[in-house]
Length: 97
Image 1 (cartoon, rainbow, N blue to C red):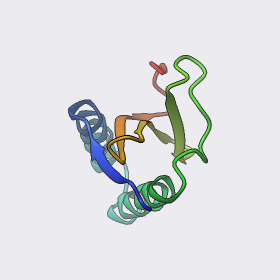
Image 2: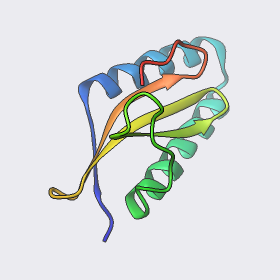
Image 3: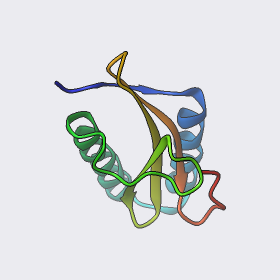
């Protein structure tokens, strides 16, 4: 059974920060490709949440690479059938997780 995805406010804030940067530096096509990549990763997480490696700093979190410039961090809540996306970040920023 596919899990429900929930974005935390921190993840939304991180995504918006990346999106603001991309809108200034990238083309609309590149932004659309990023959005498609995010959706593909989210679909993979829904169907197989354990497939991405656990964070090296916090083993309750998983890190999924979206593309060479971005990744997301998530936590699985099996009792509630929810995957919480904790953060969305650019790969060039210092990692928190």
